[in-house]
Picture 1 (spheres, rainbow, N blue to C red):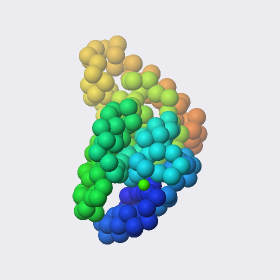
Picture 2: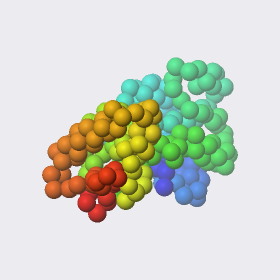
Picture 3: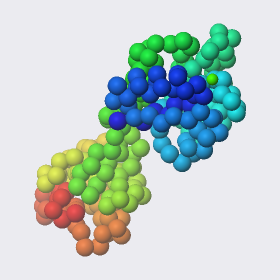
Length: 227
Ligand code: CA
């Protein structure tokens, strides 16, 4: 459920926004001062900020500039005057969108939804859990039991390949294939040395576990029950 911070000093406008956003299933928090909003944003995560330009303490523009020093949370401005729009549209402030008062609640909720959709992380970027392992292909990282593994490129690809198909026995040749390395006699044995160093890194985290199993004469597999 997206959590929206509304920064608006006019209670009637804030009420309209709260009502419209809650009707769409959002949770809201309302503050009327920019200073309070910045303090809250520094310690609490929000999915989006709706920020009035004309606030009693500092302007919404200044508040947004300060916010951008520590947060990339999407910001939508509420503007009252046409001459403010030019500044909102200017790129320096770092806002995502704006609406001009008076606005219809439906217009605001539609824009909020559009922004949230735009900034939502794509599903492929999400780390894929596999038992005690978490594979993050985008960052080329694997966590094991909550610890980030310091892996070489080859070790990452090897472990990623094994984790993708638990219990499947991969031959050395198949693993080399996944590394994108040409198969030759010397390289087959290099798989063994990569596995050896990978195992050492896993044992440093869990000495009693043996997630990578050796199958003599066949190759290696990932065994979730030994992880
Ligand atoms: Ca105002």
